[in-house]
Length: 292
Image 1 (cartoon, rainbow, N blue to C red):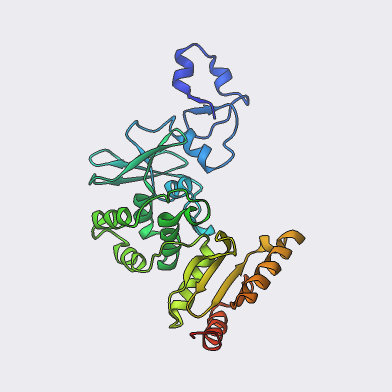
Image 2 (image 1 turned 45 degrees about the vertical axis):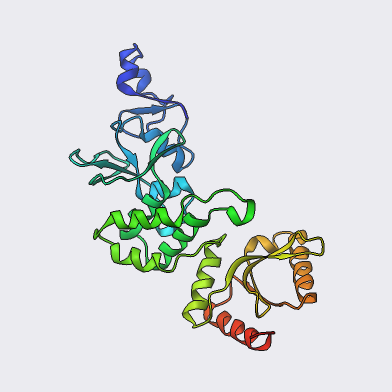
């Protein structure tokens, strides 16, 4: 998204009347853009027009840029911006200013803006999110889309742990440590993580996320959301997208039949199911299945 500072426009001879006309949008005081920001990424890009050069997009805004899942209540409207001591916090309408002590925090460039790395954004969420929400976010940080398409995750577990150690005893550190202890690689959705946590909280063993089952040709024929391979229990979470089309519905049925034919006991879970009740269904299936 193209934009410029008002002072730069005046410097090249643009009429003040034009700069304050309806031709340009004003995402921030002193900034002008040809079009209004359509999303938070574009809002962050527009914010760089008024930010000091060493400012870094942080906290919830950084999480959003990295695709880290946030609860709806934590989705940012204003842009989180951080500077390092001894600089002063950025004060501007539409910006939430932060200031921290530099201690080796990793930074990246994304969408033309300087942003904290995913593991840094995760620890910065420690004073904002609950333990469960931090586990959901952390599962994504160490997994990304890798189980699905093989791409590298946003950060490694080691990087996440290092960021947590550098975070020290700041606000939210205890919540972060509790969350870190339960982060696991492999989840491809927030609901898969929440379901795993519910099963663990019910005293059940930790299931394997996105477990691959090979077909007769040796290639992956099915990927189970959560599985207990030794017991032959498969847990499939069906989001709303599974019922949007007849094709998706048929694939769900065909996959279940294929797994059942190979001895799997399949437990389907929907958004309407209470996870405590699901845990009891899974417990029953483990008892009834082979090796349970």
